[in-house]
Length: 573
Image 1 (cartoon, one colour):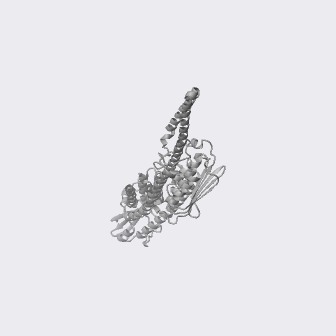
Image 2 (image 1 turned 90 degrees about the horizontal axis):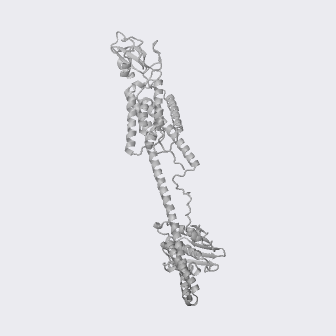
Image 3 (image 1 turned 90 degrees about the vertical axis):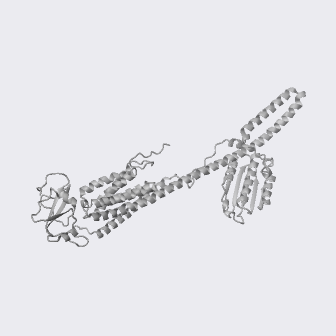
């Protein structure tokens, strides 16, 4: 399977799979729509339409590459936000994504604070140029935008990033636990196969030793009577000795189990009725009430691997009762028919709950039993009972296929099906689609919430710093400047902009002869048109000049100046 392509794409985070340009195109289109809608809702003072268009076109590429270049994108769109409040929602998207992808806590905090400060200072510094009445008003607007569209989404992105990293760590830990579980199961199967091979070593070695002994005696008896037959007997003895040597080389390294004593010892009676009764009696002596029932003939005539499987099932089950349910009543039932040997070991709930540290065990014993029974072509069922106890049921063929255990010990281990509920990275398509839909709806609701916060913040700023509306009156009820007003009253309404004064140099009409001082502003306080020849055109800046005679407003002149150099319509004053 080809590896998933990873990211040198400008629209994808480093180390993440590439998804092409379609996602970036959708995000850019959505951001453009959001900026247009936000601008239609705001409808307040701000830069000209041409300036808004240029700033919007500058913001869109920053949104597209915010995953690949998070810090640069966030700082860049913070500057755009300070000049264009309509970019608030795209700035919120960028802040959320940037902080979510930054893993170092100090860097994350520094970038987020730097972006907030940059947006606030930009809005304050360029306030008169973008249509705000004063630097203080721009500072308040910038602070409100930074708090609602940068800091709040950034904090949410930090929380989301920490959650994603925690989930990723938990998935990796679950994957490691699953791998450890499979390794433990594999080791249990290998151990059980090793036990079977060692038992075969004991059994076959014993038989070969008997054959060798009898062949040696036959060789000595025929030494004088029939030298030809003696040679044949010697040949058989040497072949048996060679077979024993090869058997030791192949299986002897596994360690024969015939050295065990007591009920663990493997003898010719292992797995017979007397052997199972001895196991039950041993459990009774340990305080476990065991009831044994046997149906059918004894197992003397059955294969050794069948008898030893019966012995192992009973012994392992009784051992687990001693360990995890001490004092519980146990029923052992062996049913022997012509084609099958069924073994059932069931225990009831213990009279006293076992200590908590015993847990549920590792389960390796049952894995080994299942492996042994499966090698003979049988089945093993293990599980709790409705009464609160536990039951182990083994069904073993009475006559397994010849050489089944010997052939199976060299067979590859069966693979464990990968259907663990804690599987770390297995996503079914419906679940993946559902997760994407949920994420999309969450993002949409988050943008709506950020938009509401932004509008509330701008409303509070507008109430604190009254600004003129389209009729010339601000929220405090002040009308537009009028001829005859005192300079103090005009200064409460108009902000004297040094940028407007500098822009008017060389383009303003001649000063009235009686004017002693003038104020310049880019804000318009009524709906009157500029003078003839100075119509507002794209690429022009509207300026209003208030000239005073002493302390009284004498004239109000409105004109436009181009943002590019050309011959002034009026002479230099």
